[in-house]
Each structure stands twice: as structure tokens, then as C-alpha cells.
Image (tube, rainbow, N blue to C red; front, top):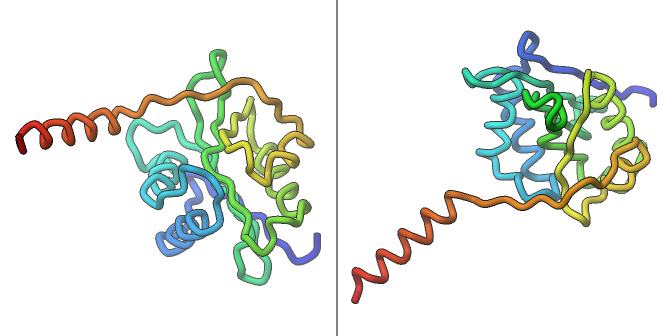
Length: 167
């Protein structure tokens, strides 16, 4: 497509602080996923850019047109090659006004998959508009994810203790 720019960011070629903030805000506003809290998006970026000591790195890909961000994806290396996918596509968002236009989804997903040197897992909700594009690109349904959130247990315990103290 004409006049569209796909840009790859790596731990060695990172986006500026201000552009990183723009990415966080963009994903927060345009993602349909459960994990679009700005703090979680920022952590995903920090892992991709190796700004966290234990991270293995990853990539950020942006799709822009005349300075306007249309889409962004964040890939994190999992370190689980041979057990699970080598990459986790932790965030992918297309601007809401372009979300029904499959060519933008396809363009961003194609570039995202091209740079990976291994398998990719993308955890998305059942109603995500990207599903058809993912299936067209070769993604398969493989498992149902169940997550136990330790933070919920701590919150429940705290609430239960407060209730007992009130008696």
C-alpha cells in the first residue's frame, strides 16, 4: 500500500520515550483485549526492549500513514523454544477507524510474522476482529487458556480479613 510506513523497533533501535508513550496510549485506546491496561502495555514494551534485566527482548512494529499511527504490535521472546512458541504476540491493535479494513490488519500481521524466527502465540478474545486475519495467516486454535491470578487471591484474602475485623 502506498504511503504507509512499517517501522521495526528492537532493543538496539528503540523508540523515543515520547513515542513509547504514544504507543502505550494507542494500544490502550484501540485494543479490544483484556490486557490493555497502560501499566501492562508498558511492561510488555519494557520486556521487548530489554529494559527489564530478566527479559529476552522482542520487537515493536508500528504502521503509520502521514504521521498517524494506524497499528502497532508488540512481540516478546518467550525463552520457551521446544516447549511453547518462541514468541508471544502480547499486544496488537489497529486504530478503531481502520479496524474493519482487513488490509491494515493483514499488513501489520504479515510484517510481525516475517521478523519472527520461530513459532508465535497470540492470546486473544473470541470476539476479536483480528481472528479471521490470524486464521488467514496460518494461526490455529490450539488450547483454552486458564489463568490463576495470584493478585486476586491476595485481594480476596485482604477483603476477608477486613470483614472479620469488622465483626
